Length: 184
Image 1 (cartoon, rainbow, N blue to C red):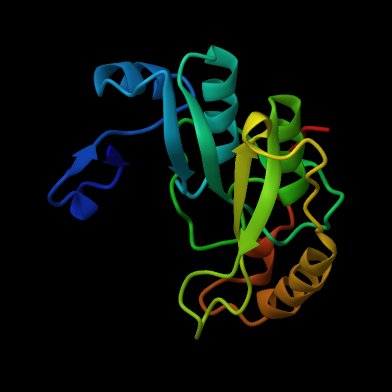
Image 2 (cartoon, rainbow, N blue to C red):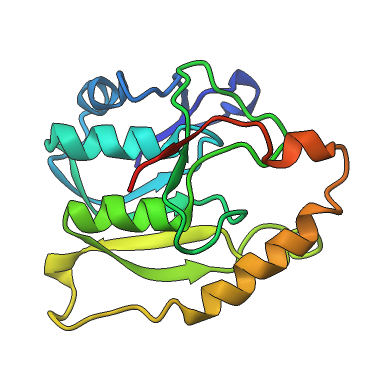
């Protein structure tokens, strides 16, 4: 098991302190001897997750069977948006992070992964809806597998309502005026 954290204050026990970027993720996998085929990759780095997963897929050396990504729920289900890549990106307590579920779904499908589940997660008193998505390599799924995403529409609508009530985030910090890349 390998756990990497960019913020030193969270590095306790078996957590390694490294700043993860799209440029260094594959070197870090080599450094920590991540197997070629491994079981599970969880990406929750509050920003450039899309670009890091894309880099792993393009390098095509370390291939996880299951991938968990935190997606940005403030987009419509058919919007293919990713945060502009910034190597120094850090959590900003705004809605400017990551990528849309459609962006991740396309990236996964283009590389042999299928969306299999969206999980309700985080603190239930704050996060009433899920924003983590699971992908599995297609070869480990039945050939005709298709995940029904109809319930996600309701969740995404719910987030739009919640966005108005997020404390410590001004209206201009929510989504407007931020640089998003169309990855369709």
